[in-house]
Length: 180
Image (cartoon, rainbow, N blue to C red; front, top):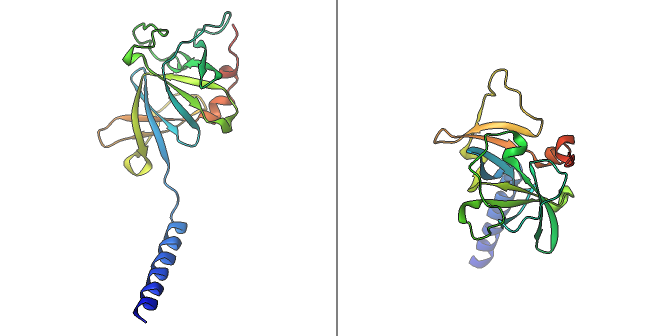
């Protein structure tokens, strides 16, 4: 008899928790990265696999920000230097073909759902960020930003983070035009 009541109580607690989870909005989560000293947030459902910097084969007659192609798990991906694409101040020169260079950066592939075999060159991984740890920040007055740069956030340390919408980036004409 006690077992039946304990089972009913467990079922009721589970049903209550499921109902509570359904009512709560899903929390947004991002992969935080650093590009040319700026913090960017990549949505976890848009970002793909993270790769160490690998050999990049240059592509002739392409934009300066298009570094070339890299073989990532047997598939060719176009590699984009996001700092150069965004027009951010250039970092110190580095040998992109020296795989052993520890702080040479990382490549972040696009999620396969975006149907783009591309990877972004970033400087540093900064971990995961949750919406509860960030506060929306007002946009700077008169600041012009590309349509794929979303909301601006501040963390508890006062660092500014910019949401980078990879789906918007994939649809951007300038991003798709790699030839000069």
